Image (cartoon, rainbow, N blue to C red; front, side):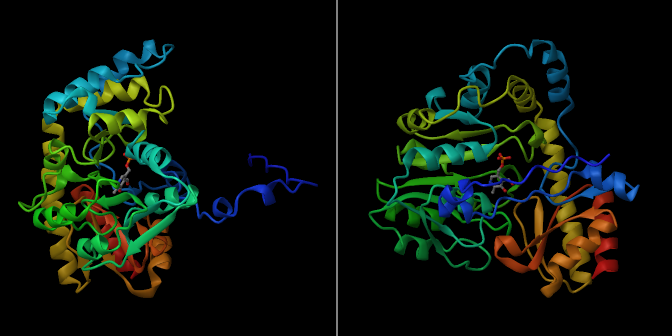
Length: 373
Ligand SMILES: Cc1ncc(COP(=O)(O)O)c(C=O)c1O
């Protein structure tokens, strides 16, 4: 049965009253649910469009959730005490320097909400994580973006664009969708030029995957008491994206400020319990990261053999140049059971991004890529 269509709004100028900067937002468009696609095609689909963990969650996290299910009549621990305690020990920071969010996106939203005034500026690069631009636009804030350099952040150019109005600086490290990183020395030079009135968000959603000795230790700046917010997530290497749980580190007064705009009970009890158990399963993360490394090597060799151009990645996805048919290719590959993402809305109209899957999924991707190209 078809779902009922919503009624049209009649005799109302309500939508005209919505501020223009909100009306103009192009909302984040997630892919179709895999269950729908599988039902329509009648085949198993390789979901390689959202950089999820192809091995799923840790069995320990699943077991912990199962055991907890009978307690969901209670609101969650609003302080996230036990998980914050684990994270404090793991990363050697104090508990009041940690906060939890319903995904790291929730923490970005709190930062945008808490620190921006109407004449503030947010500084980032073009070609970075789409949520930053949506949040800035939603807040009606001027976004200052420097051009992409070598598929990554140009920190020297960004330093030159800092003004007395800059309140937030967003750096995705590794960057999504390019998979590139900013290196230790570059970040150090940049941080020397960041004034005390700007909060640097270091978005490290994919840090577990990085295998580069030059990857910066952003905790250095936390220890120095700089205005920095380091965000991380259980959505990627931990395979818990559906639960929506992420975490952030910042000096305690900044965490306190973010709590002022946090919705009470923003992180569900099930997510907290699962994340605690997932933290204990280092083997699951190690298996995920090791497989990602060898499968990235496999994809590079296969793409090289096809003379396809791609951006070498420090994360669990690869940006591949496909020419002006990127959207068409995405649609054609979907019909053959492989979900990838064309990157037009992200500023790379000639590219698709494919997540690194299991070996079987990566082979399926290459087969369908060959057929659709
Ligand atoms: C760079 C980057 N940051 C943050 C996130 C958000 O992750 P979550 O809200 O699931 O923690 C993503 C998700 O794709 C990402 O690519």
